[in-house]
Image (cartoon, rainbow, N blue to C red):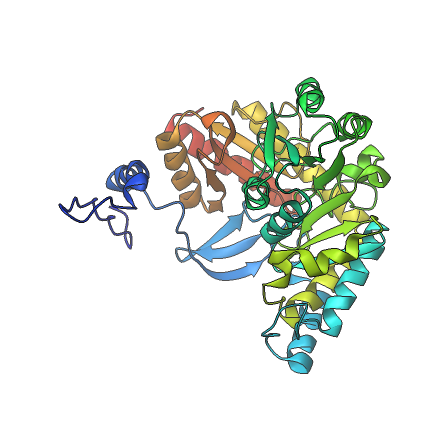
Length: 416
């Protein structure tokens, strides 16, 4: 058994106590027990003892290359970003202790929303405490009972949860299938409220949606469109505005959702929009109204990072080179990847099963490389993935080192 990992307790049956509400998790408890019994490190409990840079940390006492952090543009250690956070701590304290509609709107929150409006060229911007809450709040507020939400079946959990919270009718379609999406739209009753929810980049495989055609079809059927650009903001598009910008459809999207926990390098979520009635959302969106606002230091770092991303063309170009090199190198080594060609900063390596995936994950960690191990039900088609998230701060030399680590680990585990 790996040092520091305790075995999970086995489920205990108790007579007369009624149904154990944890019994639904028994298969997962058993699966985790089996993995740890085989002597593997728990891949979902890794501790970073010290973070050295956007691309390196001390994990298990070892200098480790980070290839699973979503820190796409490497902004977490930017000197201007850090200085802005320190200044806000000194001048505004550690937290707001209130909702945005009460005492929780500080000058920094307004400046952060100003930066978002400028970044996207939109009329309205609304900051949430997390990206999850941005989807939860916007979707549940605009699509309620009797409305229909047409969404890609591989949509993020926060999108599904937003639909459930609003009690809207969920109409899923096959992943990135334009024809299937149109068929679903045609079946919706005449006059019903319709919202099409899409993602720019899908986080598991790193593949890009055919947004131009999908948005055109959605609009032709009278639907509003929401696009989640969490994994494309900062990187894709001439100005880093995401797949909507690259596809030339920004003016056709009613809502663009994003997060600060990827390219922006901190935490929080947002929605930008040109809808003339959008500001009423501040009074009717429950996850916004009933949540404490982000600390001053967080919105200060976010605003500074967003403004710097406007001028991040060189970093975007380098990140594309990193993505192309890693994708091509892994393909040449014989690994099965989630996309035929690099489409984003995410490169997904498909594993034969969870057991071999966990063994490969641990072999890479022993090499000094951290990646994400993703498993069902979070993954499409019940796949087990090693998800690699590249950073603009990864050097050319580091990408070469990463490929060598994958080759040695893959051969040791028997995957290549």
